[in-house]
Length: 599
Ligand SMILES: O=C(O)c1ccc(O)c(O)c1
Ligand SMILES: [Mg+2]
Image (cartoon, rainbow, N blue to C red; front, side):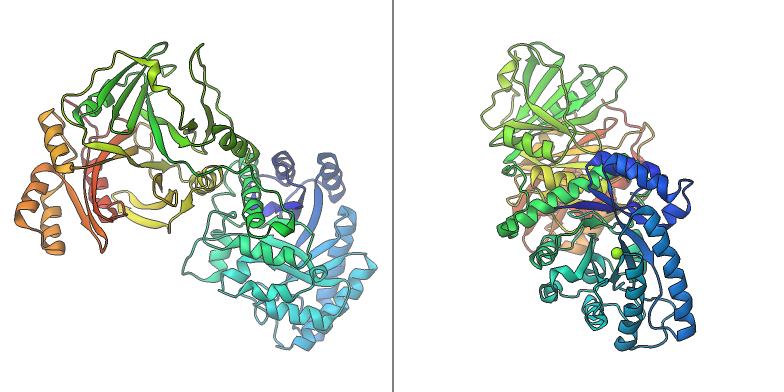
């Protein structure tokens, strides 16, 4: 599969973009005209650079507003086109993207569109270039790929073919099935973009909110499958207009983009093995969260919370300043090694995997950066890669016994009420969010639930749950504002069998849980008509409550220690959510109670 990317996806100058695309492993680029116009490099210089980088210049784009106009305007349009063809010759680019007319078309006639494209085709022939005609979703008359195909078929010119762009087709809810009727050699170019489901005008949605494949809600594996099944063997190119990606480092965005195509190729290969696409090394999704690691120069405050929550002290590591706390299957490692000056934060997550080597191989093909950690003799070495926000993701073979490296533990007095890690909430910097969705989908094979938004005191918090099909791993990702200390508070939620008993016991052990305001309980009563005795217990223990058609959720939060806090929750029945209606109350309470002083 030949991979390409439009320069409009990236930030920086044209030359920086070419370097970034080549380093990320793309085969070619689409040169976006405004990038050239703003560049101080000539087409010949750009061409020479691309040659040196081994990068093809696959498409010149876009040419706008050609067809459906009167003769006088058309003559001027041909003059414009001819200049661009001459420019393309200087570049050595053989294909020009022509967008369907959005602005100047006044005559709605397929015959006229076709005749004008045919004339453009004759001109293109003289310059030995070709035209890829693309129906923009907001085209004046041609806004559907099926109509653009009618026009191209009518034009019947060897220099005139189609450009298919998944955004324009899927954003309008058009069925891509009719792509199967187009001969592959008539498709001159393929552009792919994902996007979140939104209700807004198509142009704004397209120009600001496109995403790389795997980050939105379009079924791009089916789309790519349909296009490749026609016999199309040209570039599979990303064209993602996105305000965030255009502000981030181009080298990083290019790698992120390239990963999305590796992932999509694998997904498409699974759908249609006959296409001969490349599969990723297979790796089963994780079976659970094996451990979470909190790192800081001083982890005392975090350990106090864990003790209050009834965790067993699992001992000190025999060769480094690392301690283990556990309850049920939940394990928290606190690490003070190499953490001078660092406040408590969630540094790593360990996932239980059947085959750690396979998981690492897969991550390597996806070019997830490998994390190097110092290990000591006789210590188990676990492989880890860095998530986009720097969180270290460890692959823990289910057979691995790293717990025995910890010595002189002391079990807690009470019974275990916590059973396991229910979810880990990973707050993301605003510019890492989409990349994180793709990272967890591709490296760990997690699936994305529909995204939501939660109101916090400092604005809306975008949220997206990534999970295994069986919910053994759940990672809600959300965009959160950075705290005054420059940290994004993360949290680990522990599932327990009896959260009321846990809350009572933790309180007796000195925990001052996050205070919940009285107004919240008045509202709960109105919403759910709860048993007054239950409501009194909830109120007394600062427990939050939610209920849906499947079951109930009871939960509470600990105070935040710098960049981390804990939640304890009890799911009753088949409640599968996260208490989203309570999130604004929790966020406001956390805002009120910073800075935190712990007992
Ligand atoms: O938004 C646009 O104008 C635009 C231009 C070129 C494209 O290929 C496209 O999909 C959209
Ligand atoms: Mg396009």
